[in-house]
Length: 214
Length: 136
Image 1 (cartoon, one colour):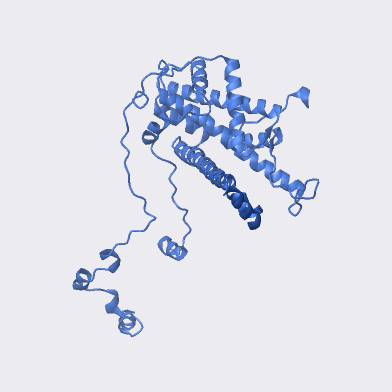
Image 2 (cartoon, rainbow over the protein chains, first blue to last red):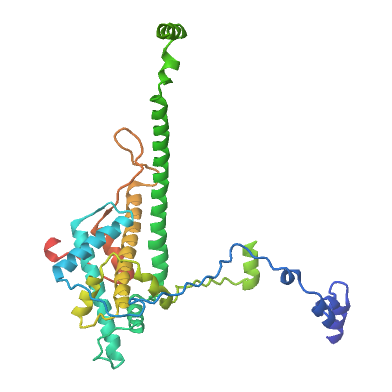
């Protein structure tokens, strides 16, 4: 058995010396990929935006207007209409709007219920302030996903979409501006005094006119 | 080429790419200061007050508003997919809608109905909606 192994290692098909590099080789022969690193465009530059301290970032109390139930229902329906319009819907039926508003109401109540449950489980029934950790746990308990997904939603669904909309708008504005400029230049050419003379007045008539003037 | 490299690194075993779920909330929260959510903060604070919670931190109120906004847009997106699949199933794949002059209609109109909304709510969030007995 051992003899067979030695035979195979020494044979031409299986070069044993190539597989076991010496210490000198491993020190001297540095791979080219390590010595000459290449930076592709795929690597994004790291940038750090220092947070600007404000009342919002420090979590200071802010006065919010109190609204009643009917006002809340109207606000929900209005926001539902706006958001469904953003998702390429053109119309919404009255019954589905009412149902959607009820489901959002249900979502709010379920979220609050799970926050209260988490507070009571942690023996903090008397506390009424909600911190970030409690909200995260409650949201995870309700939806099954972390609230860190808000960043992706904020970036992809809101920020990128707004940028796209603004880009389309600026493109259309630039097209319109070009059309207006070309129209303006054309109108200027038309209103020049020699414009019509070149086309319509014959040279003989023009000469007669010049003779008359002199 | 990339697939071969991926196979070599994964030793021939299919391993899904690790996707980050999002950024840290502490980095995300300052960005929300300048953003006004579609659902006003007053609505979120109304529900907080109704369940006996104090809305002292404006960041939490803003996060709750965004959570509800995400809920609405997710449900609306799912309902739109339902609507598209349903309309394509009824019309058939080869048929193209045409107007009176025989020209194909480019801008298709989508209407949000209960038929699309109910499965979208039920699948992702487990909210079962039914019509009342007297409407059936």
